[in-house]
Image 1 (cartoon, rainbow, N blue to C red):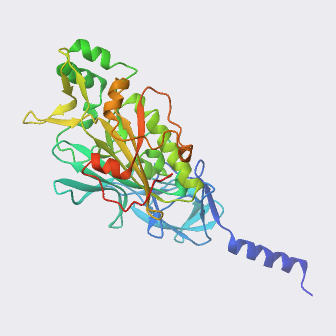
Image 2 (image 1 turned 180 degrees about the vertical axis):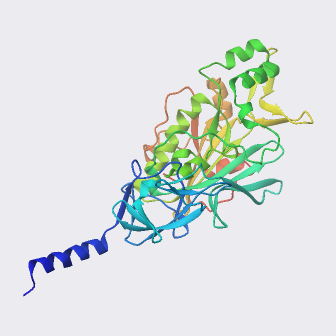
Image 3 (image 1 turned 45 degrees about the vertical axis):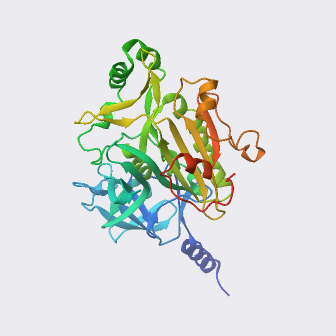
Amino acid sequence: MISNCLLLFVFSSVVGASADCVFSLKEDFGNPSPVLLRKGSYLSPNNQGDVRLGRGEVVLIGCPGDRQAVILGNYSTGLNDLEVHCVANKTVRFGAGWTGDFKEIRCKTQPWITTEDIGTCYGVMRNHRVGYKVRGEFYSLYEACFDMNLLSTLYVKHHVSPTNKFVQPGSRPKFIEGTVFGKMRMSKLYKFAHQKAQLSALLGEEISDKQLTKKQFLTRGHLAPRADFSLRAQQRASFHYINTGPQWLRGNAGDWAALEDSVRSRAHRHNLTLTVYTGTHGVLSLPNAKNVSTPIYLAKDDNNNDIVPVPLYFFKVIYDPVGKTATAFIIINSPYINNKMISDMAFCNDVCEMNPNFSWLRWRDDGAYSFCCTYKELAEEVELLPRLDVKGLFY
């Protein structure tokens, strides 16, 4: 006859052998957050919003950069990367010498973001991928087709998965410039004082006083949004100037944010992994003091050529590669338009308007104007657009 003590021991061993590690996005991650990789991909939450590891499962911890190190509790390993194993619950193990809570793992400083030129896009522009390099291998988060002459990004390509609905909270990182902008200091161009001086030079001071105010100015409009990346290190990589365009505050915080939220919810609800192209098109023009339409740029290069254009449009193509469906969402990047101007600028019939299939999208009443096109209609307007196999509308 088996004793109760032996039965208890066997039961406990079975439970322990199958125990998982479960980490909350809100509570169980260290800061500065390392790059976290599992099975060759970025660590991500499950459909319930937690990160779950099987017992003994390995996570690669990366802190890329000079004078960097992985910190375990109060101990600096001196290593740029290491592997930890799930023990159970919140506990992980490194080698034979350290066992502790997962949240005790952090980097000495913020991990270094890497931008790599991977060739041309459309012959004249350069395609860059942005992400992190760990153990000599590059882990890409998004790609940017970049105009080296205008210092302007045509579009950024990234992916939205069902689990991107869940986002690790944290403070807003600073934008970085890297090397793609050469000597141009992008951080300077977005300062209100610089915007004021530039618009005054282009339009006249009286006009610029009306167009540019403390409540309405040009922001660093994310192309691939921060909230489309679940963990902090991935979010931080979205704060690269190659992933931005000059966008008026009203549209950035209004219609654009509403669209991004809706797409994440749609992907989660229908278990979709979507490919997203977010880009800029055209150059915004505003009337100067003589009522002459004047293209708006934020700077000039050493040869006095205009660079860093303020786009007339921001667009986002949502593509389902499995269903081969796509819809293009466009916002007119100007708070200073009237109905006549909208009629001239909207280059397609709005496929979202009065269409019950798009009831999941609610534009915000923020003074900006947004509309939807078929992918084909946008491709006819924007010549330099990725060619996709599209059979119908994404909704």
